Structures are given as structure tokens and as C-alpha cells.
Image 1 (spheres, rainbow, N blue to C red):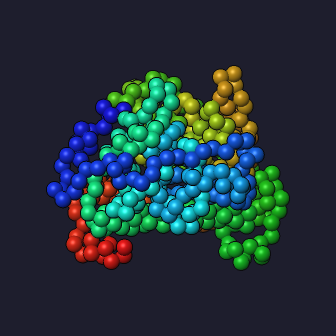
Image 2 (tube, rainbow, N blue to C red):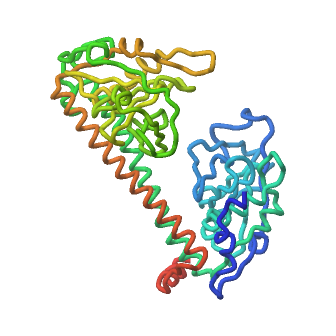
Image 3 (cartoon, rainbow, N blue to C red):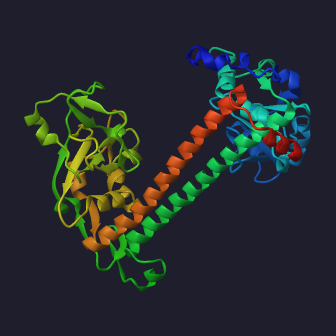
Length: 446
């Protein structure tokens, strides 16, 4: 694995500011060790008691405690030698999550850890957050991955943890560096929380709109509803099979495609993600224009995934809106060209509801190769709601506005992640230095 890491990353500790020193975890730690896994499996864990931090709770630079386990007070006494203290640095040392690291907050002072998590208790001259951030850097992660023992099992022993090298600025500068990184991390986590709330809003709004139409939550009480083949809908809406509102359904090309950008771009299953067309990972096919014309996508064509190893992915769909230009589609997709009175984007939104998914993936049939499939016959029979075009347009507009807000949040999150990664590398290597005022502020907060 180390040969895959850029050499400049591995040399960073040779290019530090002169007032910094290179040390090891063993030199700055009072204790290095892990906990024990209680015997008895799940029967040992309780709904309440003393928290037990496991590897799945240790994310990168934070703890996820939604699914934390608990042990009894008696078991806690048995594990008391590994009880945590505020400021302990936790490092996952086995499994797929090896290298994830976090600092124990004050409210978990009595928690325990299991054998897959290493506790690093530091001496006073080290800031736990600084050490945690450094261990999450690319250089440290390369060392952690490269130090694993065993041909088949991923893991570190305590000796290898103690030998991990790290830079050590003066303590006030450590705290200032950690403060800068923490501010960016908190901004990213705040953005993630807003993203989760926006996603929940979209889900709730989708359910509301397909049950009552484009009215406010307060106005829903005034809407007369009826039961239909697709569930409860406004009484003014119709219901029809997809066959009635399509000009045609068609399978795509089975011609061999290439990553070489010659010929026509071909949309495949990997390009139908999150109810949208993703233009990354495109493949191309060279084909006579007369033959390609029959497979050319038009603006508003909706493509359904017709086969997948996971049932819930069958029927996933997206609307083509001209990007990439002159695109064709592959044989594992089914193209539907709609006609009035159904808007393609309205049908796309309906396909994402629980009722829509049940009509699509819920009717997929299994095959001998372990995949699930739908075909044009199944699609033709799918029942869909058919509101007036004004209602369809309003519903599409409302949900599109939420989607654009979520997309803006996703871009903000990616920007913050990029800023964090850049700061982490530059601050930990001394290429960027915190100002004297920041150091002084950090010393004042100590």
C-alpha cells in the first residue's frame, strides 16, 4: 500500500519548521492499550448502563454515538483498567475502519472500549485534538496502513501504534492548529445536518404532494381525496397505466462500448444515479449514424434500470435533458418516451415514492444468475397518477427547488472537505503557519 502514496507525503516529516520536533506516539503517551470485548455476545449488551465504544462508533475525528452499546456496572468494574478519560485519543486498530481516530469528550469520561479500539492517553505537553487530526492526515494514514500485521488480517499491535511518528510543534501552536481545523470541521458537520434536514423535508413534502396535490399543509384538510390503485390521491386526479401515456418503450444497444471518446456516448446503469443522469464514467460506441438514430435520446426521455443484483435498484430512473449531447443508451436500460398529459419529471418523482417503487422494483422477477429484472410488459402495466398539467408543473417546481437547495449544500460540503484536507496537509507540515494572534488566543483558551 505504501508504494501507492506520493513520495512527497512520506517525506513531510523531513521538511518541518526548525522549532518543531519529530516524535512518536510512544514518546508522548502515558498509556497505549485497548479494551476487552465482553464475553456473551449481544446478550452482554444492555439498553442502558455504561457506554462501550466500539470501532463502528469511531469515525474520522468524531464519535458517532447513535448506536452505542452499554455494559452493566459489574462489567464496567471488570473493564475498569481501560476506562476512558476526557482527552483520550481513540484509534481503530483492526478491520476495515482501521485508522479512524477521535478524541473522547468530557461526557464520556466513564465509558469503556473494546479490543478493536486503542486508547492513547497523552502527556500534558500534547494537545489531543492536534494528535487526532494528525493521525487522520494522509501521511499518518499511509503509515498506519503500511504498519499492519498479518497477510490476511488488517490490524496494528500496541508496539506499532507506539512507533507511529508525528510532528510536534510547541503546545500553543498545536492548539491553534487544532482550533483552525475544528472550525472547518464544525462547519462541514453543520452543513451535513442541514442536508439531512433538507432530505427529510423533501421526503415529507413528496408524500404530502402526491397525497393532497400542490397545497399547503394547512390547506390539505380542504382537499377531497379518493382511494386508487396507487393509494390515496386528490379526487380530481386520474390514474392510468404507463402504456396509455407513452409513445413507445425501447431497449438500448448491446454493442460493445469503450472508454475511448470516439463515436456516441452511451448511458448505462452507472450513469443513472440519484434520479439524475451522471456524465462521469461515460463509455462510447462507434456506430453508423443511420443505426444510431433509432437509439438517440431526446430531451424528456426517461430511462429505467431494468436489471440489477439488488431488487431495490431495479426501476431506478432518470430523465435525459440533453447532457451529454447525442447520447445513446445501453441494453440494460429501457427508454420511455412520454406523451401528454404526463410530464417526464413528474413521472420521475412519482417513481421515487413508496407506491412508485412498489410498482417497479416490487414487480421485478428473480433469475438464475441472481439478478432481478423488469421488462417492457411490466412497465406498460405500471399504474401512475395523472393530475392536471398545472398540478404536475407545480409539484415538479416545489420538489425541484428543494433538490437544488440540497445540491447547493452538497457543493458547500465538498468545498469544506477540500478546504479541510488542504489545511490539514499544509498546517501539519508547516507549509502554512497559524498567526501569532491565533497562537496567543489558543494559549489563552488553555
